[in-house]
Structures are given as structure tokens and as C-alpha cells.
Image 1 (cartoon, helix red, strand yellow):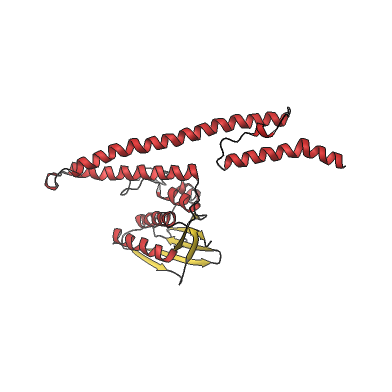
Image 2 (tube, helix red, strand yellow):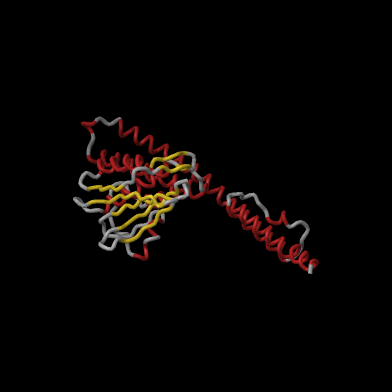
Length: 282
């Protein structure tokens, strides 16, 4: 029985564990890992599978590295002409600015925002960083974001319910702040003028849950997960509002993942959309 166990481990379990280890290293970003190097002198089905894995890992690794270089090049190539355009528009005197010049200035800002958001999204997806170096006071962060939102959307109300304290350890002000801001602005954008958005922060023992409840049209149940895809729009024919390009929720989801948080959406019973943001306390 002992010899049989040794045989099974050596010829079955060990290569399976080695393949599993190689897969885990590759999924963690080690694109140089090769399973065949772990197989030694084996020449069987497992070694064939390892070589197939190595071919796949090599192709995917090259594609990812090429994509990263493309993003870096794209960043430089797009930012340079945008900067030149901004300088050219800025040099036009105020009294000489026609409607067309003002429109060029506005569209240039929109394109710059699109470039920055696209590059941020690509970085978050490719690098999958862990941004966990700061202590964050969620209440203070929310108050700053809400003050800015009230200035930007003066015709909407924002009602809040906060606990006395909400401190998060090992997190990131920038990631949490940008994610919450994108979700709140999205809620305000689809809430009619004169209506209110509810922002509630609840202590859930191990996490803080921030709910943002709007009074907009809601989302079809089948699309509640799809709204977090880049450039996704519920209504493809809807005109863009402001500088929105359909990246806000996609960015928010990935920024929260970088601080071990998550976001999900539900339709409210009386109409509107509810967005729930969960951030671990530590």
C-alpha cells in the first residue's frame, strides 16, 4: 500500500501539483514561469500538457507585455497633441473666442478625460495593484466628495446618514475617493432635477457599507452586472451627458478591488438604482 501511494504521488499527484503551481504563478503575473522546467525528465502525457501550457504562457505573456508597451506609447502620443491643442486654445484672447473655439476647448477636455480614464482602467486591469498603504476616514472623505457634488449639481438634493466614526485601515484615499465620486456623480446624473440622492454609511462589523440611492430610471435586471463593463451603455442611442463616456462604473469597480472592496447594483422597489459599496475595515 505504501509503494502504491508513493507511485501515485510520484506519477500522478506530483505533476498535477506542479502544473497547478505554474498556473497560480502565471495568474499572479509571473509570465516567465514554465511548467516543463518543473517536470524534469518526464516524457508522458503530463510533460505534453506542460509543453502545451508553456506555449500558451509564452504567447499570452508576449501579448500582455506588448499591450502594456502599447498603452505607454498611446499615453505619450495622445497627451502631446492634446497639450498643444490646449496651449493653442489658451492663447486665443477671450474677446476673440467664437462658439467654435469654445467647443474645441470643451471637447479637448472631454478627450483628455477619456484618455486619462482609459489609461487608468488599463493599468488597473493589467497590473491589478493592491493599494493598501493608508488609513482612511470614510466620513471625512464622503463629506468632501458630497460638498463637491452639491456644487456641481445644485438642483439636486443629497441626503446623508452617517455613523459617528468610520475608519478604514490599509486602504487608499485616492482609490476609494475616485470610486465613490464616480458612483455618486452617476447617481446624480440620472436623478431628475429637484429630486434627492440618498447616501448612507452603515457599520457592518467587518466592513463599511456605503449605499447610494438615486431616483433615476433604474436598470433592467439582466444588465445590473453589465453596467460595470467599460463603455457600456444601457441605452445605446442616448446622447452623452457632459463628459461621461461610460467608464465611471468600470473604473469604480476596479479601484475598489484594489483596496479589497466591491460594488454591486440593485433596482429599488419604488424606482431608481441602489449602488452598494463594501470596504473592509482592515
